[in-house]
Image 1: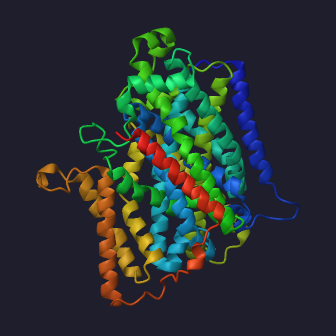
Image 2: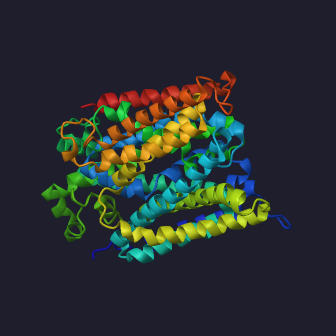
Length: 551
């Protein structure tokens, strides 16, 4: 197997990064003599995070191997259209900051399932808590470990299982001991490495395709040679239309995916719950939204540049024999980013590799902490040991995180052979997210929603979503509901689930408000001038981007 050749300076840079992360993580985790961590300290960083730590931590938790490896692979295969996940997320973050966060922070919750209990019932909370634990362990943890280990295998020749173990131990070394505080503060450093290393790789790729003429010339080159890769809105003739179905990306199912992920995903929203105040949390959200606007530059553009490189015999000849190994292709698009790293000069390889490691490890640490938070606060405390002390709950949190890591590590190698892993994760998360989103949206903003209707809606949404996914065309060749793009499936599943919940709620309550319905105060949703100006700026940038790349 061909691997990237690391020099002493590359190893020194990476080791320095690892020591810095572990040192900071353990330092912020230290306890004062005679004191022990409370549950609020461990799971919510003592509700003391400033806005800049929240914004950085949101990005570090979000950007992982899924983006660096998976989204670069989709950039190689599909093009810039995959950037809609990032750019639409910026707008979604603004919505979450204005309309969701005020309610969550006012409730003083630890977990999203805890909100479900306050709004609906303990039974529904338990159902969703078990679901989220399973999703985080068997899908999210496993996929991040697999993609991270795949990168190590491709770049350095480290066997898959050793890569899984190494990444897991690295993340566990500080996150299990320090909790969210260690995760959030190290995330600030992780984001610096992530952005810096990503920009280094982007610069190299663009400079290479332009024959050393620089970044601007590189952009012009890839735009001229692969114009089809810059279509933001795909038409039905595009082979990847089913992944990104045209205008449906802007007005359809992507909203389901983004609102679910950014608004009701524990390992994302947990950072905002740990803020000093609502205003501090909203400022962190705005920072994350601006960072999302530049993420495609460091994860999608390199994939497009790699596509141009491998299809240009002159460039491939200049790169030499090294370029002939592990070449990405449409069938193996996820090799694009690791393939690019081998061309970086000495020292910068270490920086880029540290960026990739930062993305992987920060996401792992976030998932471990959130999985342990849900298990400890929503399963262990109410069902196993109601009288558990704060110290014992912290211990259980650490143990449950370790168990989740072991299970995710066992599952990771089983994901081998999945191409475009980012699309795979989005599609199968999309089976469950529409129903859960319907439960939350109606629970937040419609007082008549009942617990029974929410439970039925959540359960019914699964077979609805699975019908779209597994129904053979022969069942109903003329049906518009068969063989739809998965984003359209998500949109329809959401609407059907919402209708089920509304009908049952109306029948059950006969049009009356549910006793647990939330009384929304307009004052709660007032935001600062800074937030409003920032939100307008984000929307303006998005309008310009989509107008320019609309094809």
